[in-house]
Length: 439
Image (cartoon, rainbow, N blue to C red):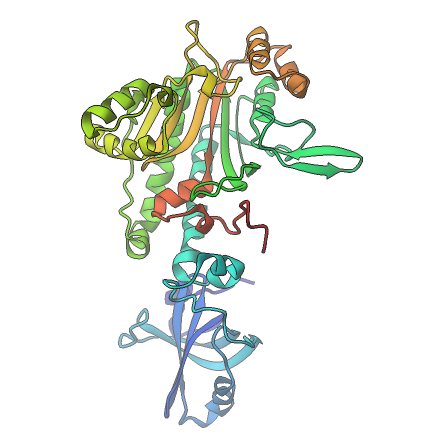
């Protein structure tokens, strides 16, 4: 059965149809009753003339309806230019109440200005009835769809790696322990080790969209203990610039496609002008970024802090990228090797062959060329004090592994920046943080 939605109605003028949705509003006047029906694609007016004998049963149903109940309506779709809502109406012949809203809602989801965010998250199923909040996830879905499409078009394979792991991944810190039958397992911080296993397997190009877990007691607007990561890895690269180029092309493609569909909606609901970036994305070395921030904006930090971008420096990178390059994105390279994971490749001078990507003043990606040579990666792991926990991982490189690189993007953070939303709590379907485990 093909379900008809509000967005389809213009193709059914003068036809009898069935449509289902929530009761968004009821105006029960002396001579006529109006119902506003809402589904995930829009709203439509249902008009019932009380003077018509055939409508007595319908009016009785309307008299007992409550806002936010769900109904199935059978009726004829008419073009009605005088109706402000989409210039159409439905004249019903049958109304079936499929579920009745029994109590007053805990808050008015149509006006969230004075509703506490924690209250909204407690009743997330109500909060997401808000048009703007629901639209977040339609836009997010579209963005991810076209990121995927770009990679499929470039012969990438989508795979799915395990989230239960037998050893604490990467640094060994900030992982969740889980009882796993008669032993302890851990929730994966990222699919990094398995991404590189796929490289050693000869997969060539692959990506994964999946949850990641970080046991960080971090209560900021952009961190979560569980988030969705879009991870990409590919083989036979020449250098880490290949990785940056692919990421820039993928994001540009996805943002352009998303803009074609939702640019006006984003402007209307979120007051954001979606700017499709131009290629190539600008690139600056970390030391040069700090030099320019000081010269242009008087931003100074101690030398010890210049081994990474401070939060304030990240914010200023947005202004720097706009002022210097007329661009919203900025690749930052040449980080000290001791500030990055041991599997990032270094050149003969110890220079890290990786980058961060900053968008609108926030880091959205750490990417790099990976170390694929067995002796080098064993030495790097030893330098970081990692031993038996990563032995299984080091074995990937014993039997030949192509040069490769990749990156990961947090989808929730990307959506937050795209729509100008203040916190990832609102761009995750259900937020997980140090103080939130329900609903």
